[in-house]
Length: 283
Image 1 (spheres, rainbow, N blue to C red):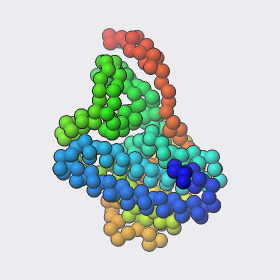
Image 2: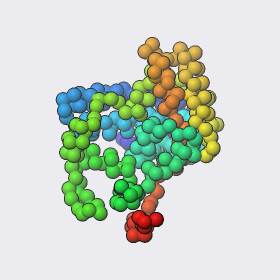
Image 3: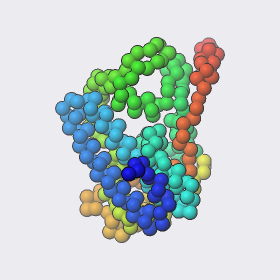
Image 4: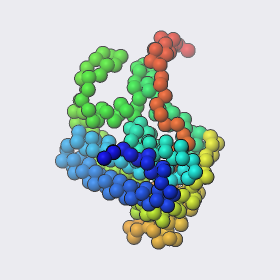
């Protein structure tokens, strides 16, 4: 048995590829919904640490849904891109970027690329003066802080970190409200995206759309509206698909990222320290 064999899908004939993706999307959607029920139950009982850990998994699973949809939006003849896109299915950084992107409302693809590149940094400066401390990659750090106990080194020294910290922070701010990426996946599922015929509509509308830096969000919204209209005309939407769902899909399902770089950008820590040393607060 071979696990994590997702890239094998890229070699399938298109009809079989669509059918397999549809099966995967339906399974992911069901799993995300079940995980969100667990988050709600844990939050209601004050099990903050557990709710945060499960939410990490729910968001990553929901991100996998969007990663698969972007594989469908790829040019069917571009095997290398399709294979690379499918490889993101098991990449924690890529999944985190997809989950974060569901929160963004960029005016253009160039703006989105800039936001994504910030999430790709291996290290970055931040603090009250924007460069007080050096932090490691935001996506990885947030994920691991909620999942693992670890011994960490920072500019302030070395110490143990435990997800126990979630018990204080999350109890103050957390609710059972779903994340944007989870809500998007639920809405898209009700719209009919998990059905093979629905994915064929997605492929017909989106393949060949290659945004550049100047491409405006309106181009995405227009295709989102067309996709929903054709899913509805084909009788693929469920009875409980609502106007709120439609607005969520139109406003939240974003630019395809299959042509964008999502791998980590290695940042030299010593270069960041040099920026700190050269900082002139009087300027």
